[in-house]
Image 1 (spheres, helix red, strand yellow):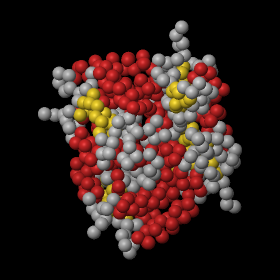
Image 2: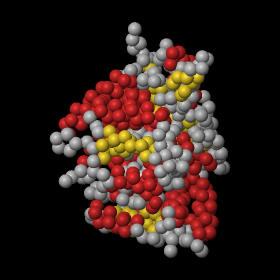
Image 3: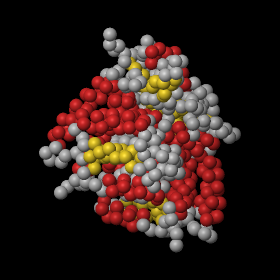
Image 4: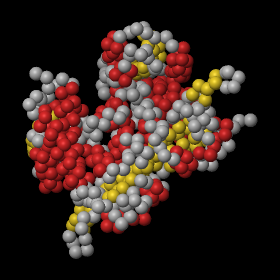
Amino acid sequence: MKDHRLINGKEVQQRLLTGLRAEVDALAATCPVGRLVSISIGPSPEVAVYVRGQARGAVAAGIPFDEQVWPADISQEEAKRRIVALNDSRDVAGIILQRPVPAHIHVRSLQSAIHPLKDVEGMNPASIGNIVYNDVALAPCTAAAAVELLRSTGLELKGLEVVMIGHSEIVGKPVAFLLMAEGATVTVCHHMTRNLAMHSRRADAVVVAVGKAHLIGADMIKPGAAVIDIGINQVTDADGKTRITGDVDTEAVKEVAGWITPVPGGVGPVTVAILMRNALAAHRRQMAAGWLDH
Amino acid sequence: MKDHRLINGKEVQQRLLTGLRAEVDALAATCPVGRLVSISIGPSPEVAVYVRGQARGAVAAGIPFDEQVWPADISQEEAKRRIVALNDSRDVAGIILQRPVPAHIHVRSLQSAIHPLKDVEGMNPASIGNIVYNDVALAPCTAAAAVELLRSTGLELKGLEVVMIGHSEIVGKPVAFLLMAEGATVTVCHHMTRNLAMHSRRADAVVVAVGKAHLIGADMIKPGAAVIDIGINQVTDADGKTRITGDVDTEAVKEVAGWITPVPGGVGPVTVAILMRNALAAHRRQMAAGWLDH
């Protein structure tokens, strides 16, 4: 039997992609959406898994996906030069720099070479600053996916008491701003928080992005609350097999929570859909800025 | 008798300015700090009061202060052109655009014309984004002043439970990021928050920036907590006289709080000192970026 407390990330993904597809198709005759360029530096099986998911999402949204694998020994300068060339390419709608990158590459510096209008991952400081100013068009994908999943519960975000656990630059803080922009009252907790359970137990919704398997147990969640689990942890079971799990003890917490996202199958698929939404938004911003005029 | 619960903003200001003066003097022989340019558009008595305070702060810090009043009917284009010229002037360390401006001027657009390296008010989206990335060199002045006043209490910011009331782009949200960067657990409340007193009463420190006189009463503060009042409200007393008051009922709350900033005389003077600190920081960043090389 289907467990209605578990939010199906795949379904939310499909709904978003179907909507995007209609918008992308509507633009085809006048100003078609350009390529979404994925850059992997060096071969990596773990990166390849993500890229495959993104490629499938792009197909579903109708956005051309250009998967590039650059040499593992490429220099920072050459990588930057190539990114600048992509910035200047009229037929490139957006650029994703896949991580991890080899140790000799300075990833933050490389990301900031991506023009804000093509920054579909929302990683540029200017993009982050725009979120603070409530201009949320190009928000970091994982953070926007968490908000989309919370919205899918039907809960009114305005006035919602949300506790964000984790204060990273690319997830925790952007989730906090995005939810503030929706009118939620947000508390950001982290490893220096004195009494995490005091906060999590009073929350209408808990969003977790820490990277510790089973950090959040059933005793830390208010009955009926929504729990969005952004964590991705690899754990080894007693029989030696490895599997992926989130930051939440899903089996235990779903007996208490009103809604909970599974890992895998929760935030991950929705993040791919948000990436496509950002690519379309980037395309529209380039149109508005006159970049695509003939 | 002196009331030790009231934090003296003027004393904090003087301490900061004295420290800055030593740094500014030390640079004089090798790479002197350039002008801090204040731009007022049209004459305005209320703006003039602020500018006078800034001019005094600049003298105390040893930073040249260039007070410019541009015509009230200047066009947006001409104002932008002048700002770009100041961006390109080697002897300009920083630029402040005083507010309010006449109705025909788009203030946000004009602010974003100020180069991030000269943005001493920390208003550029890129500056805000850098704060999120924990690069807090050029934070918005009022927000940084609130943090400095909280620090002056001697409270350990790491792990401190802070409730920020007000979620504006230039005060509330930057205060939240700055305090997160210090390790505090921050909750941002606002007009959509369902139970403000529940939050404020559990806080070790409450920072208020709403713009409503006497919003915060004694029953909303935990005994011994620190209260930083950023509000500036003009109220008219029964006898018809007007006076300036903050968002906190200072007389009542100081019987409960461990520390409280008065209005006026709390956040205001410290904001001026932070503006000078930002001017020095901007100068150092321009040095580091090679802008001042011969």
